[in-house]
Image (cartoon, rainbow, N blue to C red; front, side, top):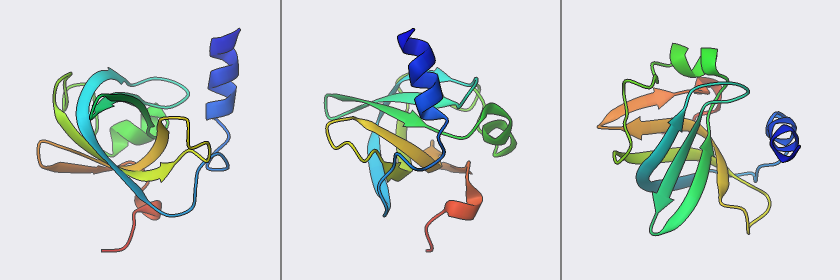
Length: 112
């Protein structure tokens, strides 16, 4: 029951995120490429974060697949943090692993 509620909540676009960009750096602890969105679990200075990316087809089209990153890799995620400041969750528009950039929402990437 809780998993279904979480999946439905996660599928409400950007309404659950703050305005302005947020950058998270840490180590990947889990990778999921599946519905409704691909996710990374990240350890950032001892805090467990959930980084949501795009739906699987869009994430893969951006070049991010399960083969490009592994548990333990350093990652930088840029996107929008949850409106709930107690929730360690964000929606990424850009993910950087091993020096390679994956723009999963290229139309939302912050200007240089």
